[in-house]
Length: 315
Ligand SMILES: Nc1ncnc2c1ncn2[C@@H]1O[C@H](COP(=O)(O)OP(=O)(O)O)[C@@H](O)[C@H]1O
Ligand SMILES: NC(=O)OP(=O)(O)O
Image 1 (tube, helix red, strand yellow):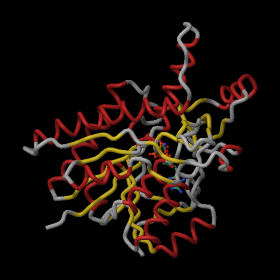
Image 2 (tube, rainbow, N blue to C red):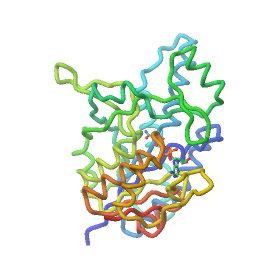
Image 3 (cartoon, rainbow, N blue to C red):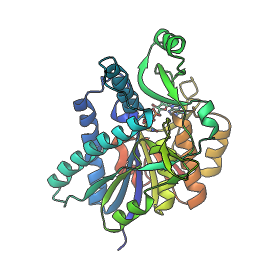
Image 4 (tube, helix red, strand yellow):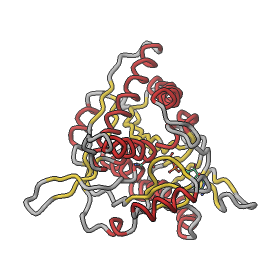
């Protein structure tokens, strides 16, 4: 029997939650809980392609670079910080999956692929930063950083102020053939973490890193189409997508058809840099593949993959 393929996108904010300090241990604790859920999916016979966000982590690594510069240690560019977070989070997810699979009596077969994602150097996103990264700060802190360093900061969904960076459209997953090959061998693959390391083709046709943070939900959608996923699941820190979010008439969306979700998207219910790209990714997958996609919280992975919990969008 062929296994059902599911692409799971784990939110960076769900791993490093607002209000948490972001220690290695606290992030590992959050991943452990998720790993249990992911292993229950493997036990049910699902084949997994996992990806993860890196918004909080890449911002944290970037700040660490800036701090190290004061000690005379050269700082790494933002795209290299993205690569750091792919390695770090891939390691943490792999380790937690290994431990949980062992407990469940399953053979360990997990690999992280360092993934580059092609973007256009001329993408308008480079002139209009929207992707929040790093910790949440007060408005005063944000205003100071904007004046002192010329950074762009925005308020993020009522949770505080964050620095925003360009988030160009993912065009091609460079390592997609390797990812497909691993999946065909039955490996659980972690790929395109943090949306992938942003790269562009220079005038000589060579790949080069470019400073940006790609939206992992949009990159995940690309992979879901490429590997012909049966279902696409985005796990974040809220159980449902809502319309009139944080207003007195907020309404959670449960089972919803593509056309109705499209209407809410066009009406502007979902914020840029947070829920907006998730809904955009889901709409694209459902439209192009005529299959279901789900957005829900990390603790509902199993029911989400079965299409019975969360905001379930169907053709
Ligand atoms: N319409 C909406 N419905 C639900 N959540 C929303 C909505 N608009 C914005 N959000 C915010 O989006 C957040 C999830 O996006 P984000 O923090 O980018 O997730 P992640 O890092 O998990 O990918 C939620 O915690 C919530 O605060
Ligand atoms: N790269 C990215 O989309 O990260 P988040 O999911 O943390 O926003």
